[in-house]
Image (cartoon, rainbow, N blue to C red; front, side, top):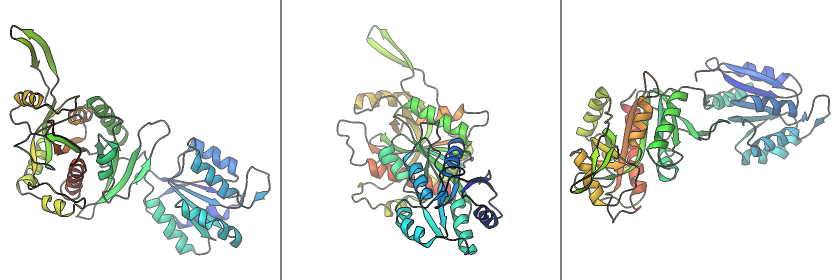
Length: 400
């Protein structure tokens, strides 16, 4: 996990602190803080982030006051409803009182919290603590892969369907919600993955978010999945476009000539990492993963064309296009253009200038329409699905 996990034990006595310390896994070092009352616990959770909160149900609200039978439950409900508190990743309630256990068990279950009756079953306690700490992903960790989408709806939804045991997280001073998870590779290696969606579509938001995530989480790879417009005749619906290069098709100068207004393009191209390109080219050429992606689609209708993956130019601009004339003008900037989107160049720029040794950026956008007046939302979910599934498979099989 990188850093030691942080645990807060809330109890007016010491035995539970000792019990938790004794069952901590050897490979998961933990720092244990101890609060003796509800108010002390609230103060500590305002100032610190905790991976695991262990709480007795019967505790005093303040130091020196009498124990209240359900003060622990009341504290948890307050934490659950109050966004000013740094909510712990996992919660474990413990009580030695049978009546308190029976009274609070349903309330814990409804919120996904765990409640134990006593600490005598050391093996069970060890297993529960180990399982919770194993999945206590902290925002201060480094991540192997950061995945970004332009849209929370459809695009991020397909990423969050990947088998990563996602846990949502938001730091108090950050407007971005991130989803932390882990993905098992075919070689048995566990890859840490983080996913987030841009606050809005477009180059600026993609660049800002990608740079922030690179600086905070130092990933080895920054990946973008989602949807794009394809060039009709070169691509089919659902086809995966691996951007190489990408550029801002609106970069240049608008001027006048005798014939009228003229746009003089002056784009800066950002290419895919050459060794990574060679690796992905092999996958594209051999049609790896594509048939199983199609077989796994459970959303109903499929396009009439065979699913393909392509490596080639992807142009980025600030407009949603449904004008073939605009698309034709963009193709004149690069005759091999495969598609048009609104974020790829921002992702590449944000990643490239995030540090002296930036992560490798991979943009995987799938075709949902052809940027003409006939475009609609029919194939957006399928396109988001194919790009997310392709990304998962190259993480599992090719990047680590």
